[in-house]
Length: 455
Ligand code: BG6
View 1: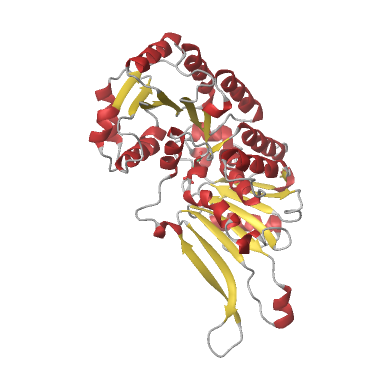
View 2: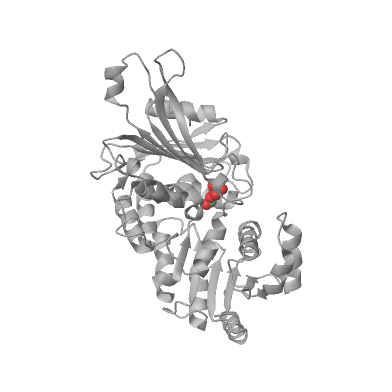
């Protein structure tokens, strides 16, 4: 079947920075069909050569441009003009395309109009699994807009033709969570409130909002990061074992645990970095949060009494994403070595920039003393790969072309995560302003009275 990948919004950042390098890598590694056609759709009055020259000149990546040029075609169109979709449909027939992936690298308010154009023109017929549609988060700006976007998508496509990307799910170590949990008896056996003290999910960023002020000021960290990436990580850490390792069973369990996750407004700390209000397109009195620290609980037998903490923000001290599973202390330590202050066991799943798993446990101090000291078992995931581990978008594009749905989110996951965030932000706490991560830490300690080490 002759395959094509058609990207709407092909002159945007996502295409230039992420999708093009990922497609290039997949071609280099021969993961995708050699005759794959790449249609770049945009509204600029360009021809294929103009587009190719522009993307090539704007890219710092080491791309095999000859291979791209061979398969690339630019299509100029206006997403509001019905005839343009019909023209594209005829073009696809003339080009003999039988397997089509349409990627919407555009803001969500355009999804309904484009879906309708694609569907009415017959470019993609509802239920025809050889054609599918992919798009990025954010899925709306709140539950209501997400519902309305989703309703228009369902009018045009079958749920199984819809691929919603949360790019965190394409990251190697996020995919690894289920292996670490369920392929290791030592972790599976202790993965509950009897042994675990708390879970902390961290996604820190060093950059501010850069040039995305207009988008970000309407959204904020709770919706930009927590509603999607952080809650997805929590679902994988918290879910019950799926009946089998298939997309629907995994999603069923993710939704089940998310439905029991509660986050109260009083347990949310919101911050904004100093200087944010000077960003282009940001309101000078903006109350948008660029930092969130939140505590949630999960009301089920496995997790009752175990706090799930979430920390995410811009303009912090470093770029780091990881999941910490902190175990309780052992009574035996106090019984046998009452004077020792052993550290609790801790499992850290490092997502980025390091990729790996670190397990902290206690050992005897080497030498003549009987002191207890912490030691680490350190697994570096990226070191095991022959080359670099694949970028999230490589994996996601390949999966969508191969119709593998596991790493894409189902509507009920989105609905549940929006519900959590909406309830949590019913009443907004006052923002604190931060100029450094030390100030952020002080606020966390003030609120929680606990000094989470390693933050
Ligand atoms: C995006 C957010 O979804 O994720 C951005 O919109 C954020 O604000 C980005 O910077 C972080 O992703 P990563 O892969 O760089 O951790």
